[in-house]
Length: 197
Image (cartoon, rainbow, N blue to C red; front, top):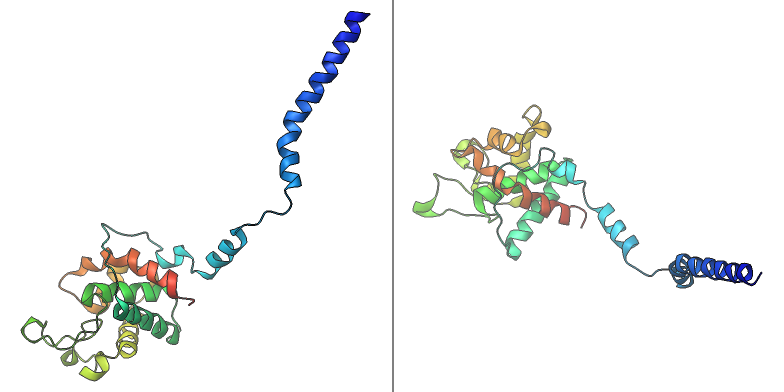
């Protein structure tokens, strides 16, 4: 009987220990009260950003380039986003526009560059007055030049479904048609950050 009592006591002690091991961490978390964290805030912030599948529907093509933007370049990128919204176009149009401007001017609103000029190309998109893009004053207005570029983009059947470089090249008719692709990730990052700001 002593052996049987001893086994019962050890069995009960074992159950108590095992229950404590399994219940300990749960009890510790249960007693901690509500968890204070930033997760709901992070989710709310993410919900404000455009869906990356809309920004880069085909994935980036080739090696990507990136430059640090100064205040003027960032202001020009924001002007492109504002003009895109004014035109009633989606985020993808802003990505294509910013990537195109990154290639053409590094988001700098270029005036006449003298001997360094590519013919009479001006502004964010290196548009040419002699090719009918507008007057020099119009082309160097970021809103005007963006709306002019996007007017051309809207005339391209299926631009929304094209790879960025194909859509940009169809409007720009560049001597370097594949160069636009290298700016897609940075353009998408800019749009994601500033579309809803």
